[in-house]
Image 1: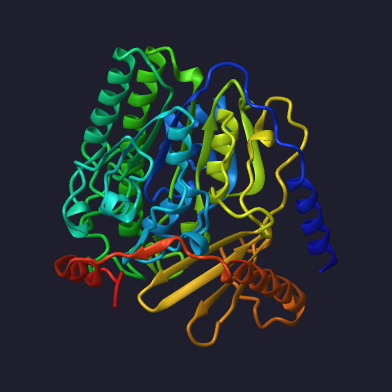
Image 2: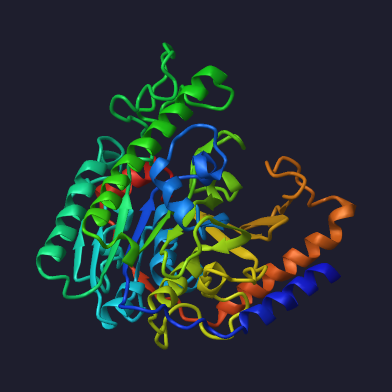
Length: 466
């Protein structure tokens, strides 16, 4: 307990450090790329054996890689809303597909637009559509390639069209005289199931497989189940890796375009994800229902030579709600009143910019990461430190799950009933109670969104609604 209190005090003191001065030179461009369903441990730069991510790896070599970046939720909608507002799900309130962001909320795009940026967003999937409020603050929000229904969106390939749209926008920006710096949010979707990469990516990581299992209809295919033949499951993982490499290749085309335009070094490039993916590590496939690390830990890579040290690896835990404040500080833009988490909120959002600057001598504070997911009538909430995690569920008895991540990274042994872990359990339960109480008096910045009946039926088939 004493150790945890000391860490909390250090974190508080570190958060009180002065804000770093804005970077010298003109306002940088910003490219924020979210690759949906991309788990960090399937990237080569995160220690994965396969060469799945040469573009992302190169960005990491030239910038900073956060080893333990924690998503605020394990499905697309609430996690992206945190990414683009700097608010946790408990504050923005967009935690089910029947909620949308209120116009009174202040988004990252709004702040940057008001600071003189040209803002453009490119969506590739239903849960980042404008109807949820994602278009707020964007001069252009293009969702032209989003399929009409969720099930329809799971087939086909979107990366080529996403690349074409973003490249066209950047070329127009260039031809128009680069009158403003740009903020581009790009959502890439192909890594999300189904796993059906085109040649040569379909056989790139498993050329000898001749079995019956494919990556199509991944979520509903009864053959993809717990206890399936390990060889078949290995093939599914190889197809997932093929999707990563395919998407990474398209990201590389955009990075190459920025380089040809001579603006790559003047652009803050961020690559991250909204959540990871499960392959039966805990008996489930897909994502969204639980809060294990295979779905919570996402990549976070940033490149900006003017203000980020090359080749830096941050081992301390990072949180998605810290991304927006970090981007603003890197860009030299002061966050306005009403943006992000209220000042003084326990474990509120912070900027990480000063910790990744060239010559930085301090590390980020040891802040806890809180995550939540709601599927149907069940909500799970977690608090994760660098070395431990607690997960509880509601309604009903909380059924706590407690894991010693330092000794049990795979989260195999639940210590909630262990006498030896009683003190740790109490400390994390207290942290979670403080976190919840800090938002109980805050107004959620969400309103009701009516979902059409035909879409509701499709969502029910996938378990997103009752």
